[in-house]
Length: 229
Picture 1 (cartoon, rainbow, N blue to C red):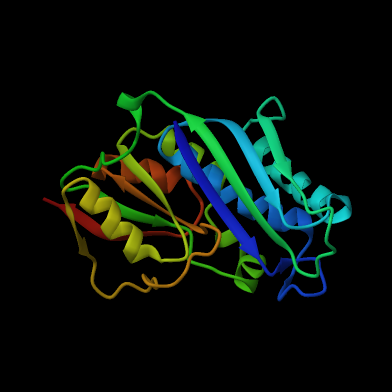
Picture 2 (cartoon, rainbow, N blue to C red; picture 1 turned 60 degrees about the vertical axis):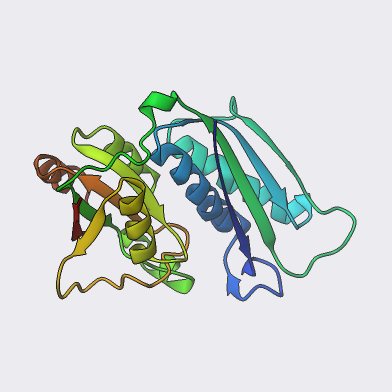
């Protein structure tokens, strides 16, 4: 069983929100993060739980619309068990939500601690946060990129980047496989910047698989390191 979760606060349509977006948008991006983490290790989502600190109508209803939209993007529908809760007792002035995704996988097929010596470590998408995500959405990695990576031979491991930045996740990925990152010099990519709602994906890949990734995925691609034992 694989479990992933994400949360968001202060982003939404309410008067107290610092970044103004629709309920559908914040539902979409929060769900995307948790779905990415489950799919990235090769698991199949079987349930999604939303814990919403807002009323069902209208804000919660819009958030759930965004959740369903992300499920549809990866070919999943409401046959997956969607469950959750909303705040119907207290009037809220700020949006808050959490999304948990539960998946299942064969243990011997998990893409976890599976990177190999001499793999290239590739960053897909740019690290973006807050208003940047809305302004530069075409530069963000998304669920369709995860699906493409899973189908490419030579991709050994995938990990979405969150608020701790690229370098944190890259070093974690390497350590789990008993490897170290030998970073490229003079990288233009900010390795310590938050990637917000997983706007960047890391993938360890053999040199042979890199060409197909460049052909299949039309997002910014940067080889940030070589993994070495």
